[in-house]
Length: 358
Image (tube, rainbow, N blue to C red; front, side, top):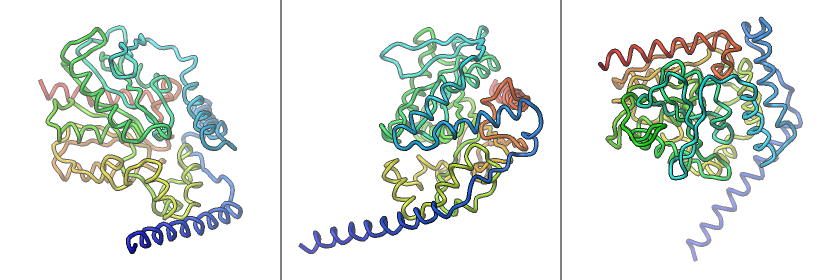
């Protein structure tokens, strides 16, 4: 009886915390200010840059006023539409029904033995191989590799861990399977952006721990390296991050205890778990890793912390920053000149890695 009473009191206490937190949230929402995002300096200049800003703002507008599944659906549809009208040089090929879900992106000169596993971003609730074809097509042309963009399971209809499992299975699969069927890989890269960059960094640590054949290199574009749940309103670059800033400001109105519990219940994993926050894990013996991040985005600080910790553990990690770029500006190739510069830098990094391994 004592145990049952304690259990009931615990949940009653949590309920009271939630009710109080909800009341505070509603008050803050009623009295909160408007959108005060500042467009980074270089993005204010030029027609192409302004077009990028409008596309990013369009993502927020598409989901404005919507909630729950309707909001998620709007975000997914908008992100997928970003690839409409793209002139792709690559062939899009879908694997058989017994293979992991995803698509092969194969440039004309791509070699079947050269493979990249690409993990798309989208806050683990949106995005798809289609939404990121601008990146995967460019990577295939750049590296002469066949890119497998994994279509991992998304929240909220699936567990966060389900997406992790899909990425792990996809990596095992591409080691022994190319676009033409079963064949060993000669050169393998794991790459991803934003939430997919988090999955990529978590994946290479898991590969190390499992004793699997490691990738030759890792590329993480504006990666999430740690779930940010504390002092959100005081985060650096919250006003200059055109893509993430508006959402984070809304989250900052939610009291931290409520936000913590909502994250645990929604993701079904503790925010401190290295699976969700690669920065919290062991970063020794990792493959050569390249991180790209904008100096104007909110994920800058944690990306730098990840690189510093990995280097201290003996891993080779390079960080290249760009001033005044939107989060994952690589998506806007070839429209944005800085996106092309970033891909050229990725090509140089992978060439150096490959030359050093021969």
